[in-house]
Image (cartoon, rainbow, N blue to C red; front, side):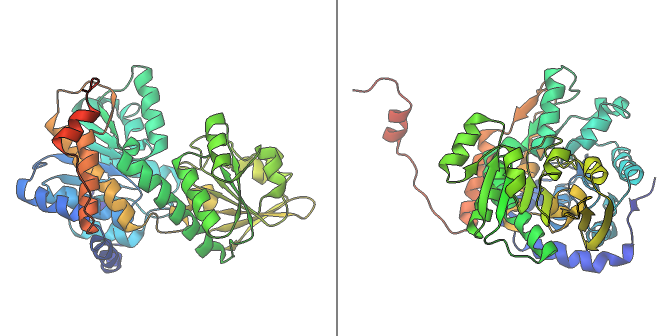
Length: 417
């Protein structure tokens, strides 16, 4: 089998510069890399990754290899793969199967090539590797000792498999670790989504009506950054508790039908499908901008947007213009895929430092507990979460207090003198 499938191996020097840059800004992962280099916990073990293939992910792959792993990697979104980064990894001997703007057939082929390396551990983002191991490549599932899932959508798919009793190997829900969702989902998504939107449109945010559809941790981050940029923020939710929280946080809360008349920018971030549909498009003002920050490109119903329009054209890189019968224009960013990666570089390196540290340590936990874990979805152990936080604080030069024995005893006792 091919050692790599990349667009152009000669792009490697440019990709290497990107990887070297993020390495300088990922101190937590650097500490873990040093440990892995000494102990080689993954020696002789095959590990497969399907995560957005850009510089931070590439460095995670190199950290896993530093721990002795034989690494194979592909992307988790056709528009987020950076060809020069993929080439840089391939040039070092890592099995890479990915290129930018892969069509559906190519994208699936790259996933299959990655799994044909017969991994013992999988690190997934969105659940595409796990899905193949439960369908077309089900015979390989018995070779997998376990894996880790990076994102909300992937964890939802895993929990559905688990609930149905069909999960074939244990998985750690890295997305649900505190050092992931409190920082990656909130601050990382918030910042990278707006970075992607602003660099793509070159338009101001201040003064605009921004509609954030979904107020989970990612939605909170998108709304917070929009508010900081001077936007008037509207939240649409289906969960009444989150809707009250958004109201208490100072945002307008209303139905999506009401918001459709008001929004200048709409951002879907729910993990569900069909969040923006025909009846929304028919209400929108001319010039409305649509962006998606959920994992899959199903939150904005693109077929219905196409059906509602009389013409479509690309007016700027990563911007499609849809003209409605009455002349109103709606703009879709990044083909409705993850806007922060399809039209940007993803989360900042300092944020992914924590998330990928969790991935590396969780993969080691899977290895150390092979055969002891049942076929279920597990939370990341608290000591892993805590260690990542402690390493991050240390890298920032921040010292915090600790409980005395007496204080620890006080808060853990039900009876006091």
